[in-house]
Image (cartoon, rainbow, N blue to C red; front, side):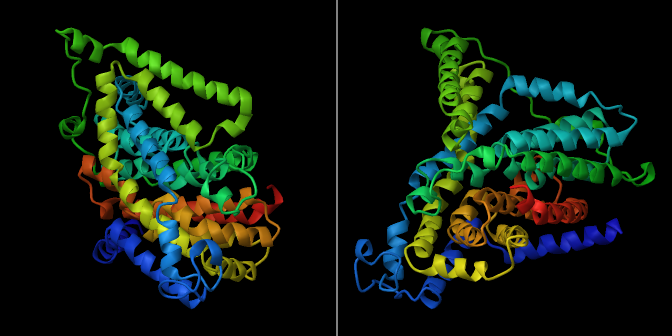
Length: 469
């Protein structure tokens, strides 16, 4: 059974590599698709409209070119916020204290019982994904060879697949969930465009009892699934200890300063002072605003402050930030295209047309399941949760309101669907695969089984969602 799934997974991976282009090309193709839809469904002119944009509003007299031009620079602030989130998370994950913590954790399982190592890896992946999606990607890639070196009887392929668990099971319901954080931000595009009347507090999404209970249950289901999938000793493909240790990348030695400038560059006091100042700002926000203080800016303040405190010098902190900045270029470059798509949807009648279509489909009871399925499918082509929310938010939230559904339920249904197909999409696995040398096809069989288990449970959860939110 597992071998058949692995073959299916390998085939799906080959199909993805062959037919799904780079994320930048996908953004261009989506721009073309939405442009056509704005003309075909929205009734907009192909180019410049009959009236200038401020006059025509979201009417048929508005041209698609005007709408695209009006949207392309609207989300620069949001792109900067997401880019900083990635940079700060990378800086946290590469700190010396977290490396020491990973070393201690990897020694906890009984080396003669490989399922214990799988459980540890699953819980580690889930916890880091709950805290921060970028921390999850970086720390799991660093942690998996350490676990393999301490637990040499553990199946290497399953261990790598388990390390990928958090990004597909937990992250969008966690503290760094893009859609809930954007919805909670007072000056987000959702408020400015009238999609939401007021910010949606995380007490209605991320901290809602429904979401917290769901995350506990789905983590337990995912962890149990992966532990049960561990093969018998005769079929286990373990990584030799020396190969696993060769994949471990410990932090380099701390250099000794020899000049006044180097002493300042290596001063722990400098980083601690600024880090504590940033964290004090965050605490003050919580005191004044309660859970409303945890929006995308509060989230960034938390991880910038933690990164500064965790690193032993400003120089070390900046090296971590430099690594994160190298990975943030995609957000910076692609967001104007997604902002243009947002303009095509909201500055023509297209968003209202799509909203009316969704509103006529299903009921308040079934609508979260519809959003879940739609978001899962779109995510396969647009694996960035923030970019995808920019595309879907204008019509899924309006249609949800037409069904009488709370906005928090629609946002959570989107979040669960968006992350689910990460399990069968190789985009977010790139850091993990690069470190481990494993191909996505080798872990796809396990990921498909996990995806089936998680989807079954989550569909039941979103069907019941309107009863609790």
